[in-house]
Length: 431
Image (cartoon, rainbow, N blue to C red):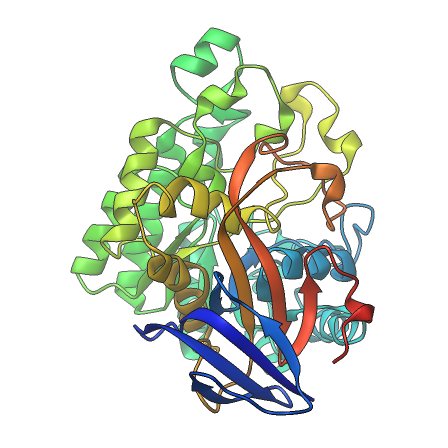
């Protein structure tokens, strides 16, 4: 199958931005040039649109196996495609946990049969994510795990984390850590501050994140392991990571779209769709996070897509599940609040949402002749109103419902195959 993407503004991820056509032949980019004319090819008109490397989400919860009522690999990857993602890395908090090679192979097999985009499993650091017994890392890596993480179950024991990092370095595995000191976060459900006091909800202090982050940085520096910090949320965390990078620590970090754009003021009406971990913080934190992106302290924007059932959220705020369904709104949120407001540009967005996460995970990304055609075509100027009921994801838990955003995904192409086409039935597209 041959495909031509015509008249789009191509940002290749290597510094170039040019209006050009792209020729794809059997999943491989064969040419990038002006006025490519070839017969017997599917033609996509990208006039007025941006043609970008497919987005890579390094923090997704697909829920399968075990929690299929929340999400499946099929529905989660459909949501990813609708959001412009061509690759997602899925967290291990499933049932059974992705803590052995059998479950890794199971996830890969389901993704191969039912997935719409590429799925990279992340293995657990400890068996059952119980923070007790270290997993068999070599077997996890051999089976295809791209990193290790205990996700929302932080390793409280510094001694255990040191051993995990030591083995992780031995097998050259990326360590992804959720930084939270449970003795400080306690039963908190939102950011600790003026708002939590006013509305009577228990707060999560910023120190809960920063204390654990500082500990992990110290250990990573001592051991020399590759450390990635999941979903940072505070000004203090940005400062700690910036200092660590200056000292040569092998550290990278991500931030979520909701932590970049919403403050704890969104919790005023007790909307449980605003409940996430880490919690929505303050305007000062948001400004620090954006500055951290701009100066390279923060490397990636990751969704932390955490779909839940309606029953998980239709309860009092302090009883509701933590998490936001984020794959389908990530691009438009970042485009609306950062790109369109001049805080970053489209090239930056490509770096944060495609190139950098791919580098951290050790996979390829970018648009160049000879590379795999993982591509997203977007219109950054079209406005729409978020309607959670139109989500591909089973998770309708979004704080952006009803909000007018700017920027839509038109096409998502994975290995030269159209996997998402807005307002069109895929099966009706001749490929």
